[in-house]
Length: 241
Image 1 (cartoon, rainbow, N blue to C red):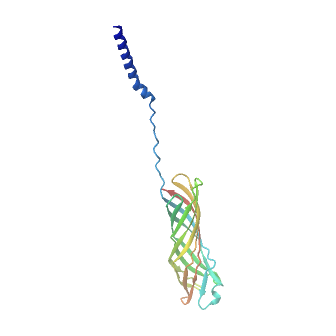
Image 2 (image 1 turned 45 degrees about the horizontal axis):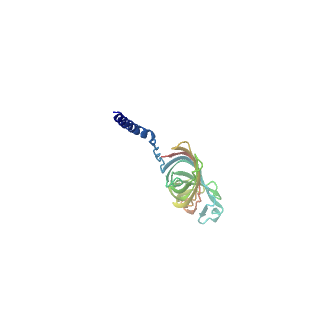
Image 3 (image 1 turned 90 degrees about the vertical axis):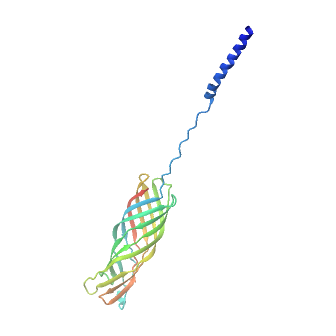
């Protein structure tokens, strides 16, 4: 009888130990590991800039050839081309966070007068459509301040060109300016206020030297080259998508 009791006690103790093993295993199991989801990349390759733009031509070196009147021709005379302030829209596409291409769009009006022997001669007016494509390098290691440099090519078309037809002993009665290609250089910066919006300042130099022809008093032929070569100084806002 005593022997049977000992056997039953041993079996009961074994069963009790087995019952505790799952709970003990659960206590000793490693805690689950939760990983944070990778952030979504919100970078977009597109950027727009809207600027107020001052267009400051540098007409030094322009040539004027008044047929039959060498005393009125260069180097005794030249051209002066008036400044202009216009709105400008730029569209940029970023191939990477450093390399971008920018297309500049805008039109500018200009007033042309004579200098030197032709000082005071009102020659006429013209509008410029100078779309410019630039390749830029953007520096990204200055935080919100993001400077850039660029080089590119410009094609300028002239339209709504009109002769002054002013009275006096000399009067320009016809005027034409030829379209032309030229180089472009740029330096500027964006200062980002947040991920989308920023302030922009930009300086560009365009090399435009179109040929022109005119007629004075309906008889005298005039031709030459107008070295416009404007500085474009602008400031405005930038928006990154």
